[in-house]
Length: 169
Image (cartoon, rainbow, N blue to C red; front, side, top):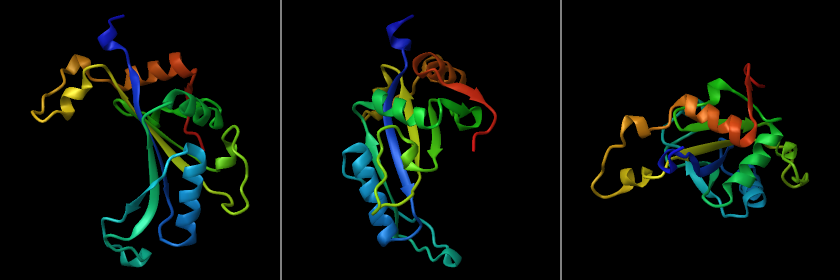
C-alpha cells in the first residue's frame, strides 16, 4: 500500500453536554480531566431555546481534544462498547459513539462526587497530505485521497477489530 494512502487518527474529541451551568457542569469538567489528563474547555449555547432555558453564550457543556496517544485511548473507549459499533455512526473520515456510563471504560473508577455520567467520543481520521486544507492558501484534496465511509469501516476492522451490526443501545 502507498504510504500516502495510509489512514491515521488526527484527533479524538470527548464531549459532555449537560444543558446548564452549575454543579453538573463542574462534574462533567472533572470527569473529562480524570479521563484524559487535560483541561477541558467549556462549550456554549449558540441558539435561544426558551422552553429549555437556553440563551446564546450560556455554558452548557465541556469538551477535550486529544492529539497524542489517541490509539490507546480509542482502544479503551471501543472496549467499553464491546468493540461493536453501528454503521450509522460512521461518516466520511469520522465516527462517533456514546458511552452511557463512564464506569464502563476499562480502568475507570467510580467517583462518588461525579456520580453516573455519560460522554460522547468523536474520532477524526486523516491521510498524509491533509494539512494542505489548513494552509493560508486553501487547496482542495483530490477525491481519490478523501476518506470514504468504506475506508473508515475497513480501518476500524483491521486496526481495532471492531464489529459492525445493528443499532447499539
